[in-house]
Length: 387
Image 1 (cartoon, rainbow, N blue to C red):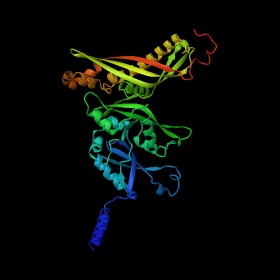
Image 2: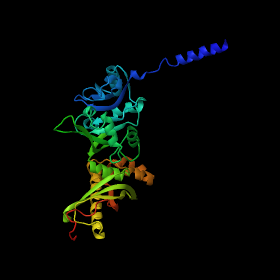
Image 3: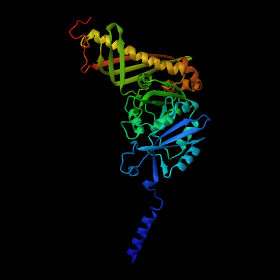
Image 4: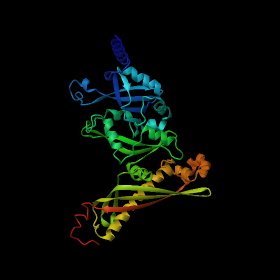
């Protein structure tokens, strides 16, 4: 009798423990979000939602082949927007699978302080979500592109960002940079590329990086300024490419960086500060259209010098842009002072936005060519004397 009573109690506990569970059929999986600024100053929020395979009726995403659909609402703040979005969905919106939040360039320049508040306080959002700016146009258009490589375009962007060649910034990274001493946040930038002959063939390409100041987009960096500038100087570069023209040799040489290091030496004197950036790189030649033979030490020296000069030029362009044009310390030079000269930083931190544009920054580049693979001299110079 006692065992029967315990069995009945166990069954009751099991049944009662499932009364508030949420079935997967009751959820709508959000894969991406786009935020745009309307003409009247409101926020237009667009969600990309995955279509369950069971809803496709055995077809591969319907006639268009899409594996997603989008919904959009307009509102003044995060809570207002979320409430309106939920009203548009018959299923409960689930954000744990969202991989990217897109900001239009216009929205980012307007300021995103009110937008980011909901991401920090709402536990439904995960901080591993990537944050990206859409160059030109509307961010919502990105969510509707038909990528030829992935069923869901968001995954295409995520794959591009984590490839090691481009900057990948999550919400967590952004918040950490924003709350850190002596550095301003940066995010990746993308733009759609539509083939004029076939509008259905659409791809998303990385277009550089965006630098932020006071939670507003201060300006954009192009691809070279991002990879050989920002990524290398911040010691995040995994793979890089350098191409140098040699006019006297009627050609060009190209190098793939497979290993890159950087060191920033900081010196303070009285009321001034100097930074010396030392960049080290190793890699192989992957292009040589000149008459130079890399097997000749004197020719290899010319190639090395040309590649170092080109790399230095691109890094200088990056430094000039953030220091003189945007006046935003996106590298963290102020952080170097904070770590090495904390007493100085206590005095300068409230003045750093004015001091940084006047700081002295020098750049040194040293490249090591480890090999040339199948590249030696150009086909035109084969059999000719190399001067």
